[in-house]
Image 1 (cartoon, one colour):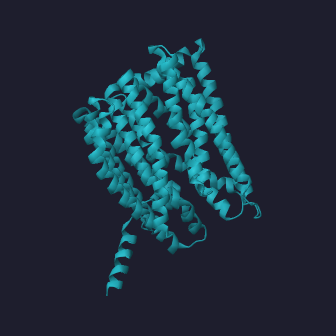
Image 2 (cartoon, rainbow, N blue to C red):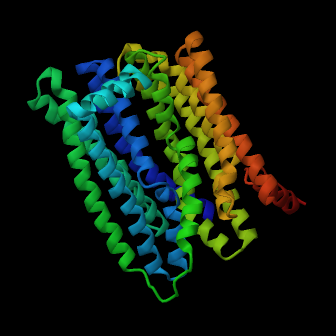
Image 3 (cartoon, helix red, strand yellow):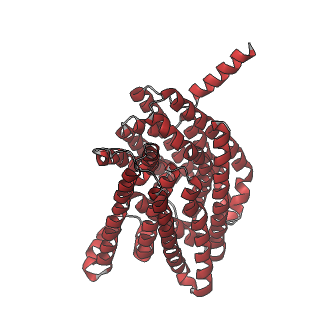
Length: 455
């Protein structure tokens, strides 16, 4: 089976797993909107945005480079080095959790009343509401999500992508369903969201621990015949810290956007846009899965300094990702309104914004994984300027376009930010490394080869 066929096959399977899980989430979110209200759905999605950002920050970026180092240490028979890496990564979550819970207890006491008032003055009323009412459940859930982030990245690097994604794409949606049903069964109407978050956070905490045991078992099976690498901890930090910003600007882009928009939209409108971003994230996973399958092989080619093979594998991944992006865009144009109608008639206002968001997938796929190439060439910090410019573009776009065009303005702001990010990252990688990570070199190579055969 050639690379393109294997990528398409495995990414299709993982996308199918994500589709099943996301289908569960769509049903529950629609049920929240229908049975409770769009406003409560907005509170739930805003809470999840805060949780995701906390979970992203807690490992200090080690989850973003765990796939790279797991693949490298596996290829070099350095299982002991991977053990050291994951120990450091998980210890960051433990330290962060201690700080979060300590701060939460202090702020909940009478002594922290002044600090609470100061914090509330810095954020929107909706964000203050989330922290004030759900901080314990949110903290537990953030710890669990952070652990699963590391678990999944390590397992993908060890060529176990199905095990890596199982906790997030299957068990997490199942727990959301269970928590929702539990809240309906035992909670009063005014406390149903609170009960749901308790059930979800405790259940996902247990799943994270089981997933963690799978990682430990997989790492112990690795050979450790090669010697230790000196000063590798410095390399971990050099790669990880800029990747915190990179991942925030990509994987958690919409969580940041939702928090920005919480001060510009009411909860019901915010819920519509948040649902659009969740559907977009589902579609985006189909593209991300292509790179997840390809990453271990790409990293191994980089470790062997095989530039020709590296460029070919990146090009093949780009081609598959770009083709899937166009297919998904067409599907969303047709079925998007039907999916949104499940949430209620008012959610149909998100049909055009959802289509606009999906254009970003095509842009991202065409310009390729520039941030990855910069990290492999030991220049991850070169990504930071592009991140800053794209976040600035998002903020300015939201500020000017949302008051005028509402949901469409929010979608256009996001698309502009994606275009700015993708183009600047591609240009930065080209100037620094001389490698064109876009889809065009591989496309030209394929077309040229077929023309030669035709002659």
